[in-house]
Image (cartoon, rainbow, N blue to C red; front, side, top):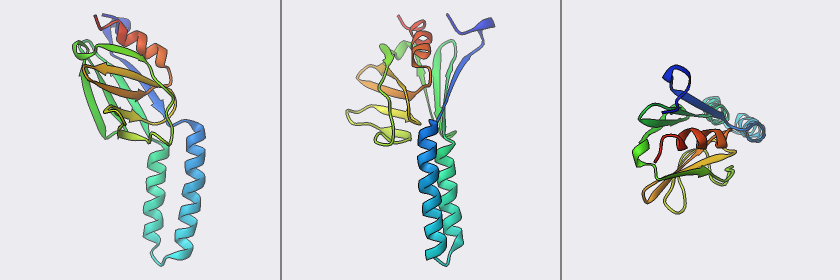
Length: 148
């Protein structure tokens, strides 16, 4: 088993790419400005600002333990995949606004844990899990060491 030094779990953490954060910041500032000017409820503008900040700071954490890997996106949505259920792993496509961010049900039946940028495709039987990862080849290598 290749986990890391002293059999400690290995973690990969990926944040929303800077270019997406910049776009979200610009759109968020515009939306909040419009709401402040157009509505008598400043609380609505604060709520919209909070949503934009939450999306801009979203991250994916992938933790590789001895028997399984765990994925968590946005600190809320999570899954655990035992290595014995993984039939293949490969670098996936770059994802962005079109695929969405957070927990996503993707066309073709896959599930995505996405924040944008490079991804890894984890095949589990008839379904696939896509997860954003800044170091897709590193993650593929680590997972590959655990599957037959």
